[in-house]
Image 1 (spheres, rainbow, N blue to C red):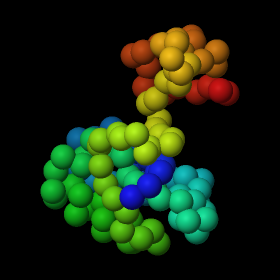
Image 2: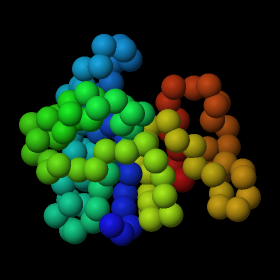
Image 3: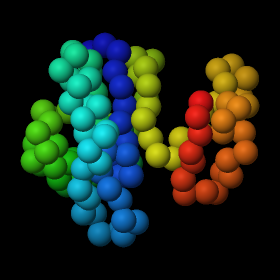
Amino acid sequence: MGKWIGVDLDGTLAKHDGKPDGAIGKPLQPMLDRVKQWIEDGKEVRIFTARADSALQRIMIGQWLEKHGLPALAITNKKDWEMQELWDDRAIRVKHNEGDPCSGCGSASKFSHQYLADC
């Protein structure tokens, strides 16, 4: 395995309604298209989700990926040195080796459900 891109599932690759029933929402087309293009370009993509702790959830995710035209992708919740990017709806971008948020994220509330920034 080499360098890879992490993509969150709920709220990033799939619509998330906030219900804790375990259902995976409909695909979010812009991200689905992006992931398909990365794969076509030969990039390794992994689904980066808290659901990875559950064997049942990993099976459900695999079925969801197949249903929406994606190959079997690694499903994880662990970062390693090979991860190059993380695409996630809750992330705040932090300046490398500084610990401060980037200028576009500096005013984001850490308790907000959505962060929008032009970083």
